[in-house]
Image (cartoon, rainbow, N blue to C red; front, side, top):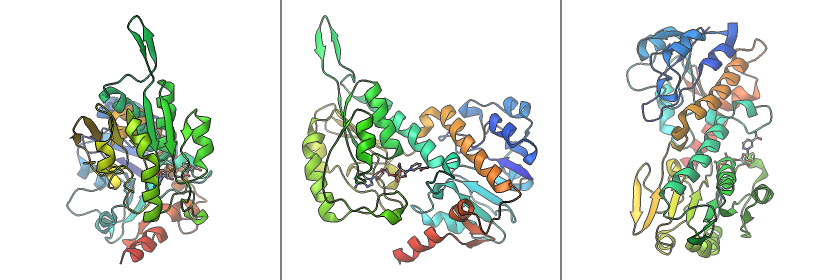
Length: 372
Ligand code: NAD
């Protein structure tokens, strides 16, 4: 079995498998890597050779030789896909279903680890959590750098500066990491999530949970949030209006799988914020939680800065690559395990989108049929 590592788009800087990942695959598979695939993440071609991989020139050489092809989110960029290959990546197939049609070709199998179940069994393969965690950390650094205010309380000859006020909307993996990072920098943090289970986690990090009653929760949603009613979103926006107006930094992470991200911060709320305040919208790739977010662009609304970087985790490309490489390696070892039956394995069934050129994923098909 030959595993091929494609080079990601330059702006992403990540690599799906590090040299450590290559070594961990051991004699389960041989690895071919596209020249320069790890360079921008701090893993030069030499380090892959030293780990036992072969470095090949260009995408076509990888597509030609590999049985399993790894690429985080740019598996394919035009031309004809080679048949009888397995593609593994992290496409947002629920948010951008159109991407799947590219893979509906004869003989192709596609797995997207964005569909990984959030279970203990699958934890080591959870790319989503790795990316969200680094994203939450990066969001705080980005905000601290752009804010006109310092984050910790600072006392000195010139007087005392109070700690910055952070508001974090959505306390999943990314939101909790943002809270933890902001707290380590000395910020006062308030947070909200529609999942009531998040309250305890927020409080355990030393932040204050904002209570807004009436959120819809669904046990069948596998731990994820579900879409909220218009009434609840209205009530929520009113409840956080005051907090938003006082915040130096707002970090939003609220997402609902397969749906547009809810608008939590309206234009009017932005206009009521303090001059110099910063919003980092981590939900930009799902439409954004702030009405004024423009993905990948800096928006200035008067004196307020709004950032919506879609690949925020790439700011720490080396660290993100180490984490996702561990996830991809765990998945590959699972896929290659002799006793693993592709048709009857909970992890493979949840993540396989296309089998032999046909869409087979239940979650994808259910969402697609609901959309028509
Ligand atoms: P996500 O990225 O899908 O969403 C981010 C957060 O936004 C979630 O916490 C969600 O509840 C929240 N949200 C959605 N709508 C909102 C709204 N209107 N207002 C405020 N917040 C809103 O979520 P995620 O970080 O991927 O985590 C999803 C779930 O999976 C969580 O319950 C998390 O604890 C769980 N999880 C489990 C495991 C595991 O067991 N292996 C691993 C990671 C995450």
